[in-house]
Structure formats: C-alpha cells, structure tokens
Length: 320
Image (cartoon, rainbow, N blue to C red; front, side):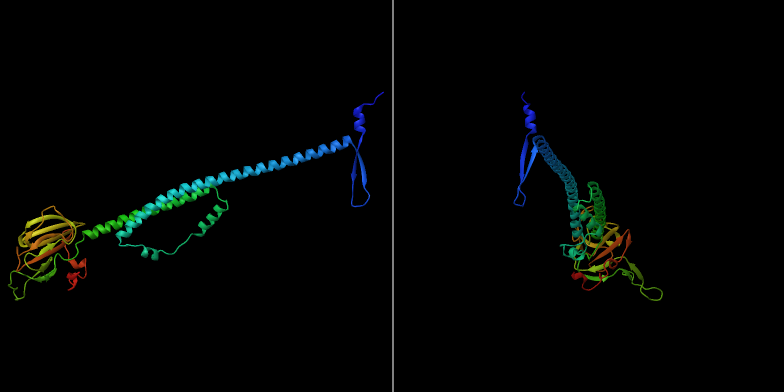
C-alpha cells in the first residue's frame, strides 16, 4: 500500500548549513512545516512593520497639513489687517501733511529730528516671538490687531480734532487785522490826546483832553488805503466826523474802519482780501489835513492795534 505523498513531503527535512567563524560547519535539518511557519511569521512581521511605517508617515502628513492650514489662516488674517492698517496710515499721512502745512512745516526735517526716538515695547516684541514660534492662535492675532486698530482710530480722531483746532486758529488769524492800512506818518495814536477842535482850554487854561479810538496815518491825498485782513465791506458812505467811511467786517468779532477818504473804491457787501485797495486818502469829515483814521474794533469795542502786534508803533514797523 502506497503512503500518502503529503505526509512524505511534510516528513522531509530541509538541510541548513551555518558557517561560523570556526573552520567546522554546523548542519541543521528543519522539517518543512516548521520552516514554512517561520517564514510566514517573518513575512507577517515585515508587513506589519511596513504598515506601521506607512501609518506613521500618514499621521505626520496630516499634522503637517494641519499646520499649513493654520499658517494660511494666520497669513490671511494678517494680510487683511495689513490692508486695513495701510488705509489708515494713508489717511493719517494725509492729515499729517495738511497739519504740517498749516503750522508752517515745509519739510519733514523738523519732524524727524523731533521724533527720532522710539521702538517697540517689550510686550510687542514678546508677541512677535510668540507669532514666529507658532505659540499664538488666530484669535489672539485678531484680538491684538483689533486692539491696535482701536488705537489707530483714536489717533485718527485726535488728529482730526487737532486739524480742526489748527484750522480754526488759522481762520481766526486770517480774520485778525494786522499791519497798517498804508505807509505814512502816525500823526496821532490810540488813546488820550488833546482835543483837535475847540482849542479853548478849561477854566485853568489847560488843553481839553479826549479819547482817540483809532490812529491817524498821514500821507498825500490820493494815497491808496488797503484792507488789513480778509473780510466783507459792510458800510460805505458819509458818517459825521468820519467823513467818507469804509467799514470792513472780518469775522470773529473783528471790524475795521477807514475814515476821511476822498474816493471809495469798493461797494457794500463786496468781499475783500488783506491788501486790497478800499479807498484813497482825503480830507473829508473832521480833519486838519490829509490822513486816514484807522480804527480797529472787536465785538464793537475799540482796541489798540499794539495789543495784537506789540511793535505796531515801532519806527521800522512800516518797512515790514
């Protein structure tokens, strides 16, 4: 009776020869089932190791993708905020330029020299380090920039208030009469003086005093009289001792009067600029000779021009 072939195969042995460092070889015989089992285990362990390796690569890849997404989100938020900051900076730059023009800065040298110090605060440096080392979240970035934008908005509002204030100052300064209406000899200043008409003295023979509410500047008949500030003509015509009179309203309570004119060159309600010709010197009204009676008032109260310009009566003032 024949033996089962499968049994014969399973009973066979595989000869393995190990050659150590010694001269003698070691011969090992292993049955096929044992060899197959060992080989299967080795293949299984190899497949398992490769699977673990691939899985680990996939996990690292997912982590890397997540980090990239986070960085992209941060970059997107930063780009948005930078664009907003750029718009704010442009507005502030425009305000700064207009303010510089108003206060007389024609270049940035004084501004640079006056503001050449500074630097980031320690908290800002720490925040930057956290951002670079990925220790700050998108919400943290957004909150910080919202806080910064609030500060920029406040600075913008402050700049607008300063601009409005300076603009108001410029308007007041433009409306403030300055200078003399013409060159000439100051025959009489603002203040107490001897009466021009009525030469009789008092009971003791002393000259009678009166108060002069303007100043008299003498020159030849026909010399042109100029406005001392921007404004609007509110009166032209004869007015008692003023003779032919021109009154200009400048705003902010200021008005100027120009009396004893021979010829009036402007019309009522006409807008005038500082330096525009209003009239010509004459001898109309109460006068002893050709001159202009120049009178400066604010809210109806006569004031001395030297309260605005202390050097008004200086001998060299008319040469300015």
